[in-house]
Image 1 (cartoon, rainbow, N blue to C red):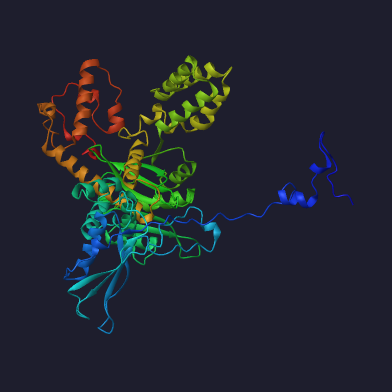
Image 2: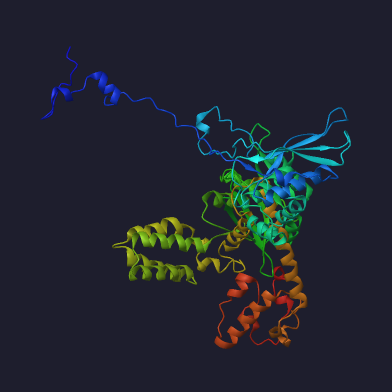
Length: 570
């Protein structure tokens, strides 16, 4: 058999032709050459003698004094020395000693699994530096002496010790400060700034602050599981809480909790409830349902929170039933509930609160309609005209006006943009009684036609959480702090309404109600009174939506009485 290459190029002689064995040698055939591992890293040969720095006849009272002295000298010269080995001496049966070495002592041992090598690093250089401390009297922890066993380093001193974990460790006092700041929800970056302001020589890094906070949370939990730790916290702060288990098991599926002060507020102001789920509050990606209400001083308060694994109808029904159980008088159920267009929540509210008016968030509706308008109609002047007409549809004061405005919008778009009108009619107009003012203006919703209060509560909660990597108990800690802050501010608003009256309400017209109703109610009445005197005419909107005297009731009266104000506004 001829082993020569079966082809040749112009000008190629036989001496240029390769045989198969030669091709294998130069790697021109299909066989892959065997990989040659890269040579091991060999550090440069350096020897820096620092024996004179640690050679001393000083006698140290205790072991800790000796160690602190060595650490101080080493840090001043750009080295980090730590304990490599020690023995307390037991009951006197052994000799007590402490061996100190460079942080680069020892030899790196590679992983057995080569896949784990990527992304790892080492600081080991087999540095021979060693010091040994021993007490002068065996068995007695006092009068320690230091001996230099090997005084040379095989590496240069560090230019900066920032980033060396050992010198950046927190001392006991700093750990207490971090613990207090962590409980007050101080961000780690501000914790680090505070530590460096208190100690300009502090070498701690932000990663060490995060590690300290993580160890603190873990120490508080102890041997408990996350769910056990959460339930322990709920019981410790006297929360009312309910749990739902997986069918046929002891695994907790959903958790509902409410603060005692929030329950008192809910029993006082149960008339309007806003419900909305928020996400990215925990590392398990479990949705957190937040239920909020509002007070007579126009303050938002969190009624309850609920971890709800599945956002199904039965899950929402369970949450609503838990919420209803918080009321001492079941006759005082919420009059209005505001949500977004969650079909499961709509169905659940219809089952649990059949006599409650259900409103849809107008802000979310307008946002969705605007997005579809940009998609189907465009962004030109005609699109702005379409959105303006949609606003007139929503703001129509009567049912007849609503129908007229809708027909005008329908006729504007039916030729070219029928997709837009089809979307509006099939998605939103089937729920027109829940957001159009022709119907909602006859519901006492106290000005709450959007879920913005719930969205604001979500924002406050996430501002405390800072990230979505915490456990369930961390989310509870944030909700607990948020509820306590809300309660403090609400109590302050009550006191201000009683003891601090604005000068515009010092007229005789408000004598009978001043100090008995909130400043927010007084402001609404004053605005209505001014409007009535300036423009005349009354649509009784304030009476129907807020339970306060409207313009026609205020006209011709020299003062306002409590009898004309709905008791829920007090």
